Image 1 (tube, rainbow, N blue to C red):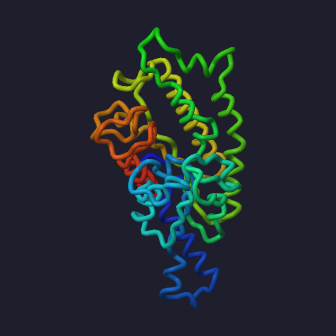
Image 2: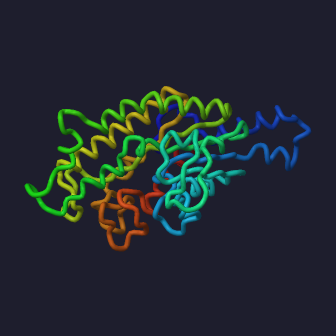
Length: 299
């Protein structure tokens, strides 16, 4: 189990919270099926494509959010036997989409409502994986594709840090207060809920690997950014009464350079035989692994 925060099992806290809510809403009058319903876990999942399982078939809404039927929140809900479950995750989401509608990913269909609309006073569990799109991580990483070996081509790190700046680093710094406010707003909407921030998995080993067209220095720059993002999520969770679940450590050795049967994350060029198509995103095995970590942390 890899969880940061209180060591009290969250499932026990969820049960106590739900039982207290049942008593508040009617005490002994809620005995029987009504009490059992009130004691159920009411789970809401918030997040971006890493949580939505983008590119993993079967997908339940390809046009709007690329949300998979086997994303980690769906697996968690099943394993926890949640009484209600609302999967509000959406590919491409940023923290702003907690508060405002998100246009459909493919440009077809209706916009998705603000993700926070799914969080209500009855909610007892919230998971959230978000922040990567706020700093442009996946999109910028695609610019690191380099079909030519060094010294040909151009380092994406050189482009990101031209003039002595660091665009993604600056966006990380700006994200700190925004993330804290988001967690506070979740608590305000669902005062009884346990809030769990789920981090991002390891995408590559140090230096990358020959089968992926990314220069070693660029891989290490991106690894550093991802480490800083996970550190930010861990710190925000600790400061805003949330739990942090680490998925980076357990995914070491299951990154884009692993053998296909061991890969939990796709590379820039997905390996033949991996069960999804989104570059630099978890595949079906990765979503299963993330679900295991969340359930273990809630145990």
